[in-house]
Length: 468
Image (cartoon, rainbow, N blue to C red):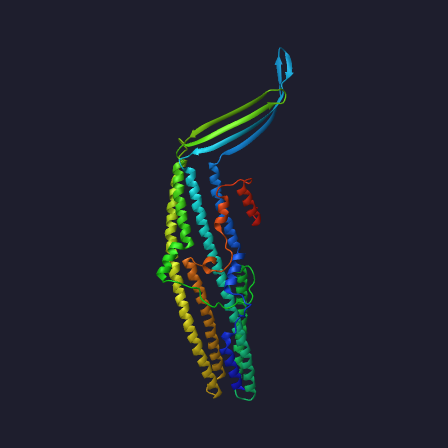
């Protein structure tokens, strides 16, 4: 009976790594999970809205170069009394006034132009921020997908181990009945079974937590998850990847655009100290309801205004802009160092994960041989039940380590892509319609009014995305 039991135990334990979550044709792939995360991410939606707000900043400043038309209307009733030659008469009248005014900026030494260019740089920076958010969303989905698979495999290993220990306890009790083993052997099997139940409960709890993280990261609960077939392609050496990241990583490019925007803000602050030339016009009509009197007026003129003394406000604004520029330069330097470090760390983690995977595979092979040897020695009476249980536990631990190591390799590889700046829907070729950050900008950059063809097209877009 002991020989039959150990042969069954060995076969099941040796095949434990093959028992994983379903991976048939209907199982969900990692690519499908990433697509769902991209399409369902509230964080991406939030930052797309922030990008549209930045686009509107450009339109708001562009509108300052357009004619500004305003109308006004007022109606008043004047009442009182007058005394003439001792005769008191009521003095009342009602009138209505309507006026139309026009103001147009003619020249401000480029201040508004600099502000427009600075706003455009801020838009480009916000686009890079959105791209970096996309990387974060996809990397979180990768981790969630792989953690569900890892913890699911852990649960199945623990369930297999529990079944094996139940079988072993049953065999130990049978052997105790015929006097082949002592009560100690049975107690050892019972203790190991209780430990296995505890391990299974912990694994099930970890799996449930992984499922909740998947739900939060992807926007829905996971189904059967297919094991990834291939690692993502990583081209180039560490030095080449670091150089690529320093050129193209969204955090680097965001910081560069912020520096450019701050430089333009300094120029705008300098231009604010110079005169402004504008055109103004006004036309109005006033009618008296109590008589046939009326008046029609109009005026047009060119205004030149410039600051003389504002208590140091303009100089302070320029110094503030210069300080912000210096801050952005420092930020760019720090971001560059951080990106370089992230690339080096990501590759180091990948190398370590691959080394652990290799050693874990060797550990499984060695633990398998050890288990088979202890099992055969136990048949001859040279090993105890505890020896078999320990060998079985060592094999289980080795298999667990191998599953974890294989998962860590995939996570490390995708982390390398994120560190380089290539973990996006476009770079991964996921085949999903991507968000075009320039589409909304192209509609609003000229500050269209609602009654214009461009404004009507913009209204349709807003209604389509539910933002009207």
